[in-house]
Image 1 (cartoon, one colour):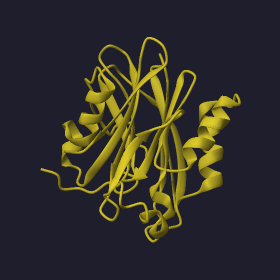
Image 2 (image 1 turned 180 degrees about the vertical axis):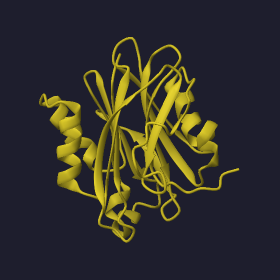
Image 3 (image 1 turned 90 degrees about the vertical axis):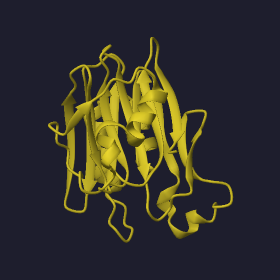
Image 4 (image 1 turned 45 degrees about the vertical axis):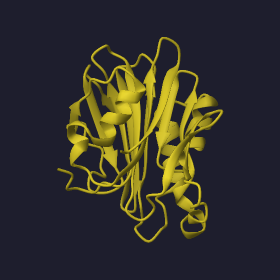
Length: 214
């Protein structure tokens, strides 16, 4: 039974076939009327039709959440997605791109001081990166991924990067990965799922999928 609210969640994972993935889940109590929309460069989180005015109530609720830069997938809960992707595209190492962007943009200065979170994986890698900037600190960590493992960080409660916080990951398609982060395994206990976006390494580049919660 879902009994814990984590807000937005990002994760890095590697399935039993050795394919790495980055996952993003929107959980929301205040702005549930949102969906994921494919763009020419990735995926964006936008208000559903009829709720476009919500962006005037909170400017942080619409953003590009996923960018693919060559062999690298970047998934985050805010406008930092584009800046991280652009720095990686310019040749900056992933750790530096994450640290510079998260430090520069800081946490979201809303009523809840919502942290910014980010997940980055390179196709074929055996590790990924998770980052979070909170009101009280900044973390950027390289996370080793055994085949069949998923590690996550969230805006609330699980808001520090803990490589020991992991769950089994068996998804073999990005659609299955979306279903997983929306309500399977460890994620079944987390409340208010809205939509999910996942990038799973393919033979070339990444395969993308987005799903709304049922």
